[in-house]
Image 1 (cartoon, rainbow, N blue to C red):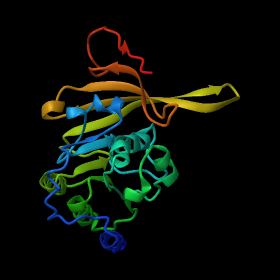
Image 2 (cartoon, rainbow, N blue to C red):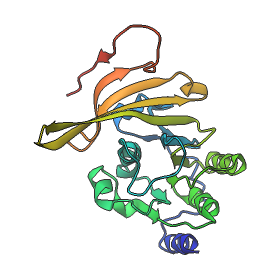
Image 3 (cartoon, rainbow, N blue to C red):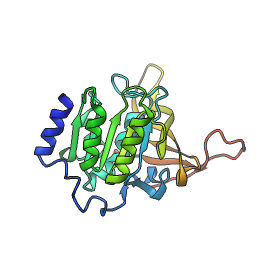
Length: 249
């Protein structure tokens, strides 16, 4: 009920555009992302009508206090550029969501819908948001039945929205998984956390079938990811070649 009430309030406020809007599928087909993350996605951004799972939590769901290892930062970085350039975004099922962290990541809070507790009818809430929001992030509440996952993915394809499950989501077009996260700045007994080096692996279907891997500073000096290493193959490759170091200024 709480989730449906929030959704009705968003509709009244004009946050959710009508599904009959003739411009929904005619808008730019690829929503922008921070350039370092673009190398992981087909077309260099978030393609409308696709499902991009982020975080890669092994058992699905979102633990209290946010996901460990940089997954929450990855989600914010993934949608920040689209939000900054005018797209509407929604966050569903994340009661610990931090507005300050989102603003620091570049997300426009005045174009962000929050449904922290969608209730048992969460799938209906997500489906309604897909009808009118450009990017819908959903913290998966446990294991999602294949029928629900397929139905929501199909709705995103039809409406031209981007569905971003936060956690495990079978059948996603692309899955971005944080495989390593290391903070720098601490010394024995003292210091300050200054920057975090995060390795992200992308796997998917179709144009995303070839795995890709990057390592970024997250956040960078200006609050955005800054590429440190780009490796176009997964870390489990059998060859002994070393990763290519790419410095971007």
